[in-house]
Image 1 (spheres, rainbow, N blue to C red):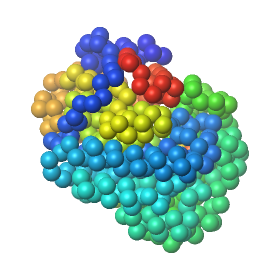
Image 2: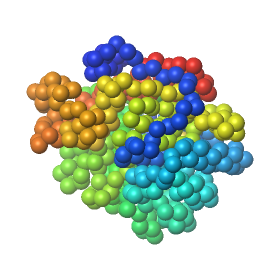
Image 3: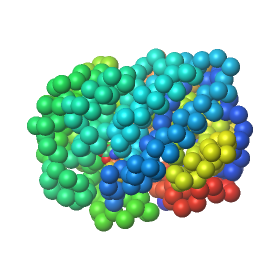
Image 4: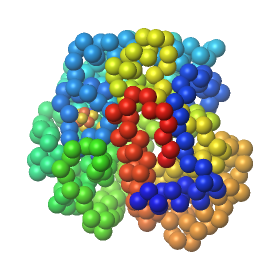
Length: 417
Ligand SMILES: C[S@@+](CC[C@H](N)C(=O)[O-])C[C@H]1O[C@@H](n2cnc3c(N)ncnc32)[C@H](O)[C@@H]1O
Ligand code: SF4
């Protein structure tokens, strides 16, 4: 598996040089000139821990959480204060974990962000189905939240049991959603669960749109090596049939494919924290992507607070990109939206996409993976499946390895991918 990603990396970066992450941590972050930048804030607390979940999270405790939020606000000021003037950013997303557990501190966090950044495209937050209550939704609206994403996973008892999740009260969720209007109401589902059929997924999608969602994300189940999940993986052929069938269904219903995994029923509905050219991440495990560097914060809550207490950034690892590495990173995440615009690439790198990757794009066209129209490359259904298939390799070779180490070691010396 690693061999596939290694060979692809060497081919596309035209170099044997791996992605090298080292423990440099106190360099200033040069974000002032970065256009189209987003912000991400990680809240790593959950009421109970799901066995399948790879994200950075710990069980909620009031005292630990209070200490963490104080440290988080300090990190926002430490980084935000590096710019000489207020920086305009696209969006702010809260992810987790379960960010609703800190709903009473949300206003404090947003006020800290507002001192350094002007947000132009709204604020998003991930919610657990148990959080979707009228009172909480009202509080979120009052804090300025414009987009919510609910981790439903499945409306079917069978798959809730497989995932170890409680039943979702569909009518209570619908009622709560009717009380507060958000620009985006997204719902997450996991597909490729054992025995899952097209009918199961179709009814999930229909229910989501019927009870108030205007956007859905259908993620393929990934079996991370470090989770204790007992859920078996669906064979490739069955997975492809299911993915093609649900994609075809959503497109026939007139939903807009906003990325590989997401569909919306309204034009303006979007929920995407990672598909930005640049972003700053705050909190445990949060990543930051700038023009020439990528960095990731420590995963361990106590170590995170300790670093901030000593007035240092909680960065665990930093990668300094070569230009080709940055291009590959850019293309990988832009392709997630199913489209790559050659003019945007050229604006970002100052060199034409055709010059850098003309051969690869011609091969992709010949293989029927992409089509081109006026300099915009769009993924075909086949291309989307292979992107998904490759992304699974990438996740298991890169993310699984890095997160596997970082959950145990606060500040590793170096990691090569
Ligand atoms: C940070 S998580 C969850 C948000 C919220 N805490 C919840 O549980 O509802 C974001 C999404 O990642 C997806 N996810 C989590 N573990 C996954 C896995 N092993 N494979 C695929 N998707 C996964 C789920 O759909 C989940 O809603
Ligand atoms: S899936 Fe959500 S609730 Fe479950 S452990 Fe992960 S972040 Fe927490």
